[in-house]
Length: 483
Image (cartoon, rainbow, N blue to C red):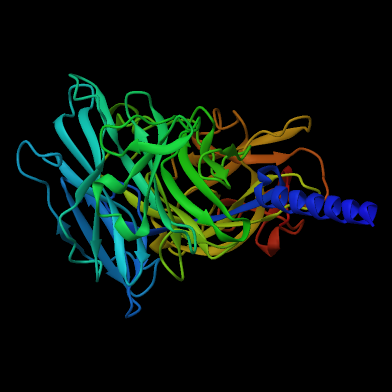
């Protein structure tokens, strides 16, 4: 009888461990990222200067928060993606000498017990032209309607004060609460060390500064204000919660990693990095006057649940948000972009990230653009559908093709795709790497052909050998993922 009991216990424990590993298995995830959709033209306005989050009110409206120029603004629309409406101020910078004398930024508002709670980023002692000098701290506020917010109280602050010519303090934080959790968690950037820290507070007392405790020396005991904190070993302070997998995730924009990276944890403090970027990019220089003609800029990544608002998400029905400045754009040329994300268990326990390569048709001249980049002049284009999913990083041990998008220097409306480094010498300028294709056919892949329409005098890509009846094949670019 003892033997049977021991065997049953062993089987139970093994099953429990396997189930726990399934929940935590970052390398088992299949991630697909959809086409980028421009939902707001923020050109020549002060907003879009922080990560963009959305809430859903009880009357079914959606409110998104666009901060900048020292104040926080709200945009109200009938859907989470309908953010082209006017932005109205809801919070102003504080008095001279206060923690928010340089401005306030509303981050990651979430629904909580019939009200909304938001992290509020503060800055003081700022002299931005002097090495970006500023000192950051974090407050928390609540609202019943998402428009009228109480004055924020400071809950996160560093014991290290302002320094000339440097960014200091702790800020840029985002809130998250797992379903049914008794605590709110806040993830922040520690500016001097450029690392991520975390604190938490009971849901019942989040407006009390003394309730917030930083994770320090392996425990939740260090005061949120002036207390020390452990580095989490990852960088990422935009946050969401993946409900099917019971994991919190952090997002960060890292050109050295190769793009937007995602780290996941089942215990709030130990994170594993998804091996591939969600979207690829290799530059993140804010000096637009110097490099504006040579690159685009992705900034301030956030999370949006399209149906519910907030940052608790399922396997699909959500996306990342970010501020985008296109190739050739200046700081004033800002756009808000949404990009669908789906996450599921990968077959064969091998992680993969696929990014939608989408064909667009210009309504004015009939030309095409096949890209993974945001199409900022979207009113001029019709979405023509996905050609394939491209890889977001060069794969190891498999031959691949780096896919570049080029724009004709004599005919600005004419775009084409080519292998890495081939834009030069074709009277085209390089816009950037849209992703990677397999050089040879793999399982679950489709061919990606470069085609040309002599009637429209336009290049485009197709996964059909007849070029969808629009033109003729020039050559095979490679193979992309089918789904």
